[in-house]
Image (cartoon, rainbow, N blue to C red; front, top):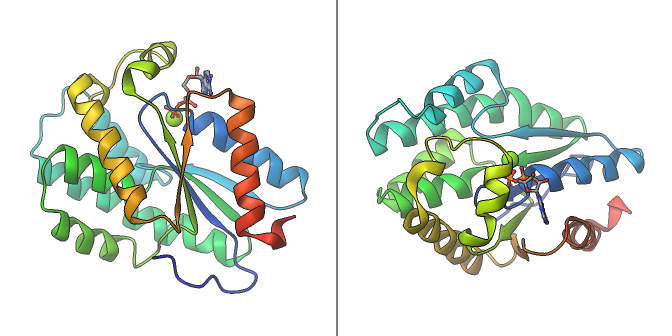
Length: 215
Ligand SMILES: Nc1ncnc2c1ncn2[C@@H]1O[C@H](COP(=O)(O)OP(=O)(O)O)[C@@H](O)[C@H]1O
Ligand SMILES: [Mg+2]
């Protein structure tokens, strides 16, 4: 559960969902909203966001990197430790909002549910890697994977995670929905089949609702 946010700290907002769900698109629009309201917001992504994190990202997403599921999970967590300490926490501390493309929920779904790693171990290791940091609010952009295949193609060739096929993508979707059902006070599910504008309107509505001071 998200802890109480200290006064003056920025909002830590994450976007989750399958590839092609519209995370990058919505984050960009939300950052424009904050900036137009005179607030600072940084956009970042996982894995990545730091020099070491981007190197780990390249390794993880390279279709030629064969690795054990445990190795994969530890690499994601290593990238997260750097990201939290060097980017996210310092930004939040100076009052900047942090809009992050994927975070711990993706680890739990991709490495836990879809790869079958021990959920309890992942939870503990992730809390350690993230030094206990949890998002204030998470938007889950949800749609059946077959509805998103056209959008994924538009973005270019498949990466290692995207090559897994429809069964894997369905397990990912079910995993995210199950996490959302267990974290209803943090995770908001939005139908990703709606138009870009409609989704962004819903995102902004929930932000204003959750953080009345952002208006
Ligand atoms: N709601 C939407 N309706 C139609 N197309 C969309 C929508 N959201 C995003 N797209 C398009 O689908 C593609 C993938 O979107 P993107 O934001 O990169 O997804 P993600 O970051 O979740 O993988 C992009 O070409 C984008 O313009
Ligand atoms: Mg993206």
